Image (cartoon, rainbow, N blue to C red; front, side, top):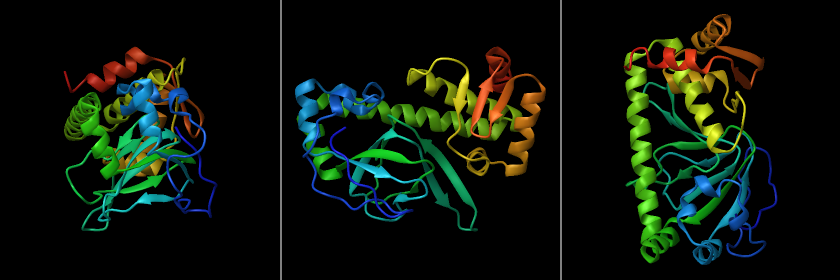
Length: 252
């Protein structure tokens, strides 16, 4: 979506440049069908392109920090981000992972509520919040799409809270892997291989487990014949039905 910004120093987000110039790529974006801009017509997408900046976010870089003014919204087009909050006692909580097609900026707060960090070399489309607000007023169907996305995120947050409250580690991990598999299918990926851009520590902090428990649980699922682990960052689901049965045991 729109033009690219040259790379920058490691662990830093490249400096901003003026929006709205360069190649026109929104209509050909591979994740457009997953993003909020799918609500826009071709002519309306051109209006979005005028205010959108496509920028790389190197792995390890922080796109925004908790407590900073929320000046921009983002759509991830490549890679993966994590939303992190540091608790009062110093523990880290990974609230979620932001994958291609996801929109970052659905909030009633004027400040960022999480640190937004890249866990892989990524690319985002950035729009100023004021300009997105104007676009939403011009195109009510975009506003409806954002409301739909907000409802989906609320449902996902409720499902995740229920899983953390009721499920044991194998059930939590099974549920997590199935959600990633469903997302891969939406991206058009066929087969049973699921990429894990996040590390075991990230998964642990997201599922409310220790990293050792996550590692043992991966091994347990593999020994049960539910998954294979051909690579540290790849899971091959061997038994979808068995994994679904495990994830749904306590949720009925």
